[in-house]
Amino acid sequence: MAYRYVFGPVRSGRLGLSLGLDLTGDTVCTMDCVYCEVGRTTRLTTARAPYVPAKTLLDELAHWKEQTRQEPDYVTLGGKGEPTLNSDMGAIIQGIRSIFPHTPVAVLTNSTLLHDPQVRRELALADAVLPSLDSLVPAELRRVNRPHPDVDLAALTRGLLDFREEFDGRLLLEVLLVAGYNDSDANLALLREFIARLRPDRVDVVSMTRPGTLAAAQPVAPEALARWREALAPLARGPHGDTTTPRPGGARQFSTDAAPAPGQGHPPRPADADGAAQDRVAASIERRPQTAAQLAQALDLPPEAVRRALEALATQGRLRTTTSGGDAYHALRQG
Ligand code: SF4
Image (cartoon, rainbow, N blue to C red; front, side):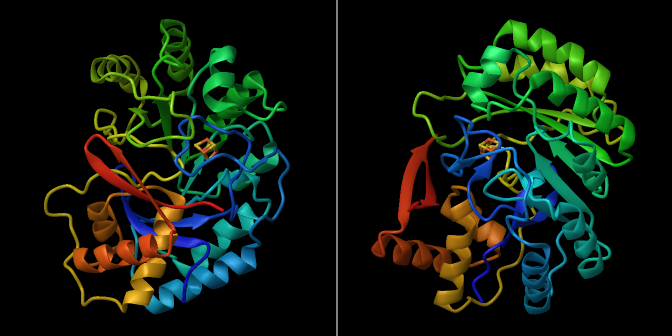
């Protein structure tokens, strides 16, 4: 069976082996970030709706579990858009708990709907929430995140602070820097002050490692990244003690880009049938660009099966390959 809304599992720097759930089914988001790896937002909205109904998603997840018998480290709500836009999010988190009673649930969010008490109540059902916040300078936020006109920065920060008060789980904040967009000293000063008040459990400062939606959007220099990490990471309160090991980078909706630590790789299993491997590779790169090695690792597929799957997708004209940092990243052609 080709899965539409379940993807991975993929190796995440912050969450370990993370099984992803796509709660929007398409590029539906409250923002249209210049660094987004999924592509341009096709539906820019702040309206919540059951973009993927809970039953559809949970049926697929139960099927995935039955077929694979894998236990990921986390089930992570994310996808091609902003997961909190799905008004079934609370029911989805509760449903995951009956399918995977021993697996914690994480939610990736761009923080824009946290001003809504109902969204916060649903999010608080999760074990870990990974909000992002790229700039507190309004003009920078508009340039880097290109939010829906209804997104209000003051409401966003208030929502984050309120959620911190209400939520007992892990709060892992991420700041993604784009050179010339949000790496100003003014932003650093404002974020420092805000994060000191927020006291998340961890702060990750990352930059782009793959092409975004705008060619002009480029990563910051390693020295700048190091300076920002040094300034912001210590503001986390722990207790997880992992504030100094930010994941290597990448756009946030798929915290899946960290290379596995030595020895963490899964033993290869017998090759999937080519068709099934191709479906899994296609589903994975539809949501984020990856190298062949990352795909083999994340999907637990032999490199040869990944190579054949990529070749087949290229032959079908469905593959888009770009080079970044000397590595070839494969994505599914849109439209
Ligand atoms: S990076 Fe995340 S918040 Fe930004 S447009 Fe893409 S899905 Fe939306």
